[in-house]
Image 1 (cartoon, rainbow, N blue to C red):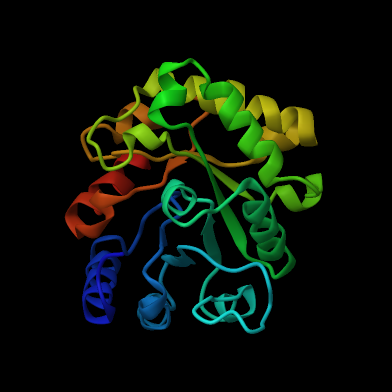
Image 2: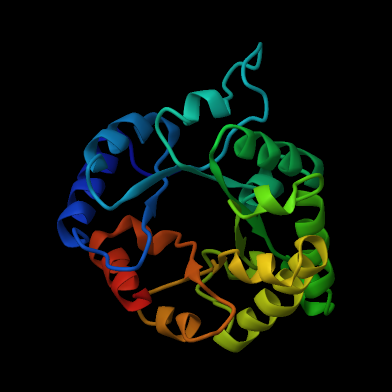
Length: 240
């Protein structure tokens, strides 16, 4: 919940200027709902893509304040689903996350499915179990064919906005064992290896290289650093 329309457009303009050629890195900007249309217009014709931060699972109806996949597909190609803050503050459950994932896929949107453990679960050694369970429930009823359009983001809750990032090796272990291991069981080894897995949690220009060197981490879900064009551009360049 940062930046109105004007600030979002200014950030998009700055990123278009410094990331005119991001190379092999796919860059997706996820502004607030109020700025989606404006940012989509700003980046049209560039290499940058647009995503939403959330959505409802129904196409339409008497759900005041919600935004449907039908509304989003006119503006965005991606949508973040199940972010830890949505789960923590707004009562999102594995069931509602699954409904959103399936609805996004139905309408041609790429879900960025977020999974991750909180501090108590981390300290109790429950990380892999929690992440595997969230992933299984999030993809319940999703075919191997449709799962190919999903991006999985591992975001340990204890690392988000705290400055306490997971180590590269630690994040990679979760992405490899809990995420790709679970995906292999659900959709097969080959399909699991083809799905992009991101790390999110206090990602900065200083630590992105450590994550990108890991074999099971394909990219990053960037939070605070994405609000500053120079920092975000540095992360994108390092990822390439």
